[in-house]
Image (cartoon, rainbow, N blue to C red):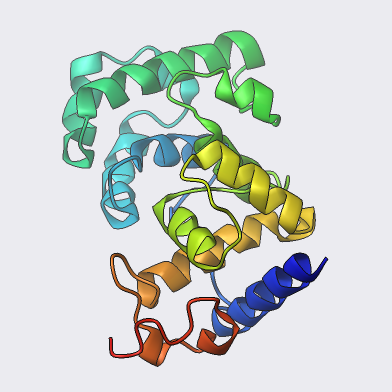
Amino acid sequence: MKARENALKILKSLELIYPDAHCALIYRSPWELLVATILSAQCTDVRVNLVTVDLFKAYPGPASLAAAPQDKVEALIRSTGFFRNKAKNLIRCAAQVMERHQGHVPQTLEELVALDGVGRKTANVVLGNAFGVPGMVVDTHVKRLARRFGWTRSDVPEKIEKDLCRLLPSAEWTQCAHVLIWHGRACCKAPIPHCSRCAIVALCPRKGVERAH
């Protein structure tokens, strides 16, 4: 119980520090968020937001993307990295959304991860931000901070997700990822956190470890 209380205290403190924390990907629909999240693998959100402007102009929905030539999609998303594999997955994913879900992005984790290019992280991003279904997103920032806070001992994203979901109320899952990502980018950096300017250092199990930075 004490671990849960401490975790919630840290999270609530971070929510006060980052009241505007939100998904940095720009989207107008669940489909656009799904595509943007697939593209965000090994790529910055800023780059993805630049790329999707032209991508969504050329292929505004799953029907048009499912019929798109792969080389055309590759050319549009090249700067996001791993563009050949991403283009293949996007086209297949679009076709699956059309065939299995009548053109609508599914709203369950099981159906989402069955789509090409969609893992648990992507599925949870879509569930939490597009549909308001609690989802614990585990990216590199969440993984790093969860371990530093003592919320998990695992290095495996799926195990970290389960540990955090057990530790925190489901109503906090989606926003938890946002504030951890924002804090990870702003202060609790890799490989060395900036503890000397961290507003929650007194609550952190690592307090004082790297105060010089």
